[in-house]
Image (tube, rainbow, N blue to C red; front, side):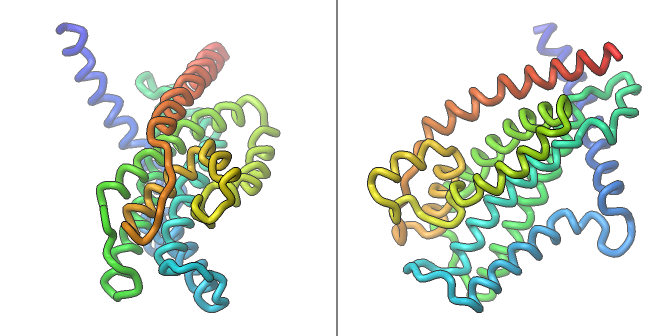
Length: 262
């Protein structure tokens, strides 16, 4: 019981530290001018809205699904995992001086970036979904609970990958450049632009090994309901997300030991 009791004050301290790092990150990145921190979710909203307008004007979407809702769900998931992972590539170096404070740890720097990007992508999707539903451009989600579960699982995967890619990028500058190339190659396979049911049978089993595909399928099932036949593997997602946490945390621990030894 004493160990548990001692963890509570420590958790509160770390919570305040991450909160302070979040505020600092927002001010550093967006400043106090114009709309300030609102760029956190306005920027991804503008990007997603631009894609929606482009798809609508060119008539690129030919399947029997609401084009706006389909594009919104796809690009929303892409912004979540890409932004979360990409922003952690330089989480340490710009904030290295903060580690001189006794209670600030390397993991806090990464956690602040992860929380910030997940919050921005989440607010962007929520606001766009609410606005488009209010205007009648999209129908109300069929099952919000499924959408939340899918979003949480995808955010968990993105956080794990952010720790791994961010840590490796800290150890090697070339790793971040390699990841940017790989992320573009991964984009068409992520599930944002297709439903698994549209693919040939042999391809369906293959793409379900990609964690983001199951997340996107579950999100769209919650969005469209019986309008789609979704394919996903929740058990596999839980195993992958849990397994990816270990190397991410071990890499952070290794980097922290190196920084403290300098």
